[in-house]
Image 1 (spheres, rainbow, N blue to C red):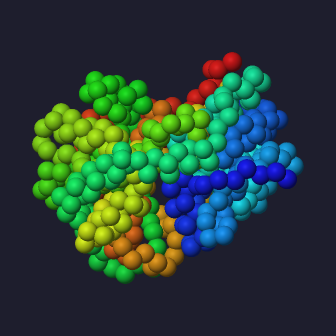
Image 2: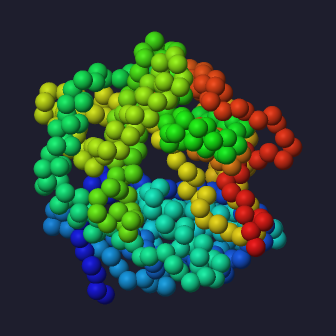
Length: 447
């Protein structure tokens, strides 16, 4: 079988290291309920068409002669990407367990498990290997998927990863790359190590990681409207609300977090899919005047977007070489604002509702108590990961942390404080009998 081989992106290399050394493949996965008139054969055709059109979904990543190598394989229809399961309880449990066997060398890299619950309801477990998919990639994959599901000709162009990974490496040899690297090193020298905005744990924990969640009733159109009125990206609003929450707790006028940036400004970005994002530290303003805080945070975000191409691993090495700490030790908070990964996968005549993978129930509004994510105190650092997802009728705020270092009760209070800051930005709608906290998308009126 003929194979085209080439380099990985810097982000893909880090994800490959993570898979090799942890033994846990990095995946993007969701469990959702499909409600409505659903065409399973059309879904299967759409899934295969998407893999055929986009090379990263049929690529393997492995170490070869001491180097990470990406190899693109031809589309193989004998490798099923969709598993249709019975409605038995054991099938529901197997589906909700999520993506299994999705390694860097195991194809295909986008898979689906479908369980028929009743005539107008199916359970959908979606999984993608993270090396093949980031936020930009998922939107491109969804375009192909939707066209094929509707029986339309595929208008989305094919995408690849090797060419763009090669472009990244070639660019790093340029004077522009050196200038960007020097800019970051000057900026990072000015920044002191950050601390978590919560109190330390007061009891021992045998849980490696824990998650709490907050969902509030806010129409997505309201969020977009506020961002447009302020002339800033939507992410700016949630980052500013975090900074003001921290300012109220710590008295600091600004704070720094790691946040994901697209990392796709080099030549060939429009035809590239795979993991190409770059996480960099940015300064968030928490000053008292909300309008000014939003403007300052937006300036920081735009500035980072202008200097996003140097991989964060190189920035960290540069900081250490100058006598500083690794960046992961200086910036313990990751804060990302994302779209739901399934929101663009339109299934005409259907509603898509998020479903809890462990209980198979749909989430409710308000605060969800701590959920353990793993046993054993394996982490050596106090960390905190924020994920904000804007849904059609709600905002979902998910906070993961290391309970051996962090007091879970104070995390709950932190989320309550954050909710107060969000209320200053977005009006929280009153409760309605038709509200669905887990509504991802509604295409029930699409012919």
